Image (cartoon, rainbow, N blue to C red; front, side, top):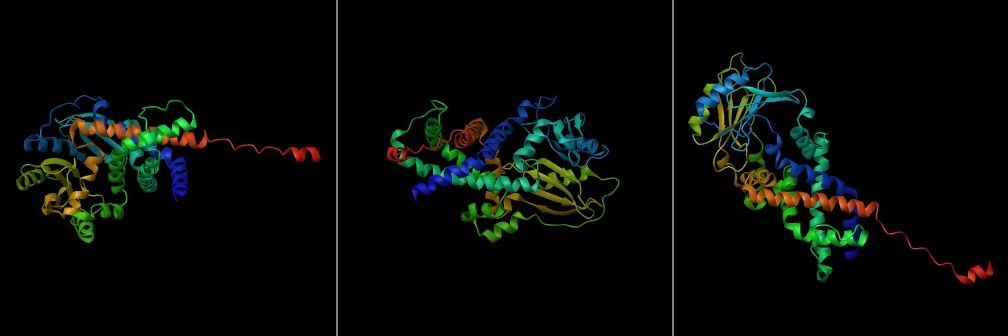
Length: 362
């Protein structure tokens, strides 16, 4: 049984290890993207008062082609404008556009994010990442089981003693068991965001799965066609009236005729950086169609909404970010060295000795 588990662990690692290594590296880089973007205004303090946000929104949404805004927060002081498909721009909190791009390839933080979430291939890439996540979960569990047999030879090393296959295997085994708890958290939370059935299973202790699934599906509202002149100030004012302590996070225009204008907020008790508190406005009249309080969702849905903040270090401050950095770098090292040792450092098959009697008779 243990021999079969060892074979599965090695072969799966040799086949999928490189994907996990690249995901670990790209994820680690994204933990610090707000520090290296380096545009004027990235470090500006957040100005979240209604007057400032409303004036900026009116100015930015008057920009030709503007389809939505991801508002600045305490970590990143620029608004992100969306113009459709890959086009976008950054603007300061006074409404002045700092930079624009026509493709995500012009902004490294965007294409690294796309790689980490989609492998540049959209939904198909998500499936590959999800399968890699399930394989990673198998690696952690099977690795700890296999390590238990050799626990008496444990040695902590940040790097293999030498680049030979036995040394790499020993380092892989001992380092893996140290970072196993962090890897487990990173892999589980990441896979939850891709495979809904897996996520429902993880949050099942918090409430019935059917109730959680219903709460996670966003309700659909119908309204009129988008008006030529939209009163964004009135919408923001209504949102602030209903949720006075919430931050404005995302404003989105309808994707297709009849869809509402969506405004997402983040309440102080929410972990999700962009919140799940949502208001839907009729695109034709600006009337409020519905408001959804994220703190009143089913317990299982609220637990699910904590997965991304944990996975992306949006909570926990620098302590958690450093721990996730260790997890990401360890995944990069373990995955890459597993592939290297499996494909390029495999032991050569032993040569069979030629029997002397056979030589004599020949």
